[in-house]
Image 1 (tube, rainbow, N blue to C red):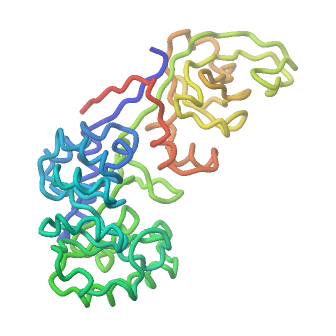
Image 2: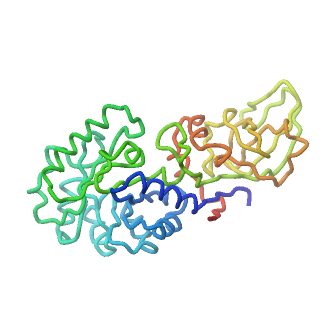
Image 3: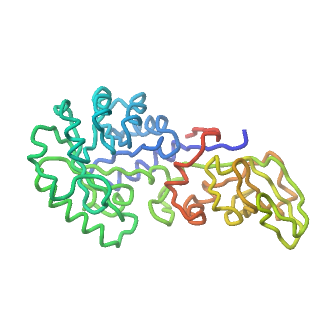
Length: 348
């Protein structure tokens, strides 16, 4: 074992309760798509179910079928909907498709007595019915359980697109009296009650990461990615490190090689750019990150560091938002790109 991912289910539970409090009196659902944002959909959903969550969202029918192993609730929504091939399986497993188009609606016609959600595109310009096309008569034969939209800029509270989308959605929802509504993702849940609708559906915030660029101190750290030191090496001054012979320095250095690389989800963009935490100290990544290995400069702690020691790539000492900024990406991508080789440990 050279790398491990520790998932703190107790921290996940605390985050859910925090977001549930923020969402109240609206319901707080949970988005567990992409294998629970890389952390394991089944253990994540099982803990959230124990915390009182009864509504879940996944992206695909296949994800919904897999989640049925642990989630026996009627409200298991499939965000990408179901086409004519997938609809029978979705119905078999009591999944609720989010209908995004007339073609998906027609594919669901044989199962029209079963509930559906309807998504309206109010400004994301991605999935959903256009505002002018979302008319009640189109769904007269169907059991519409939820009307929803998705915010494009919720991680930026002052962005004018938020209010614009809210206004457009309000006009559509007025056509569907009595139908429950859902607007807020993680960022929307934090925007305020006018964005909550009847069901909030946070995702990344459940897993301890901010939907924006800055960390949120009220969220508990759920995921910690660590790697072991495989070797320590003294590198003379002006000698480079790794592929491409980069990362040379003016003085002698002690270089530690970690058993983790971009195949495990460490962004190659952190080469000669990022940092890790070793023995409580921040130390720089030097040289290019390769498929299986990463090298760090531990010169300042060379007397204390040992082969077999664990260092943190993100977690309580290295905020995932910092790593994302240095890598030119976001926390969502860092979590969902985690490789399968790291041992998963569930605590709390």
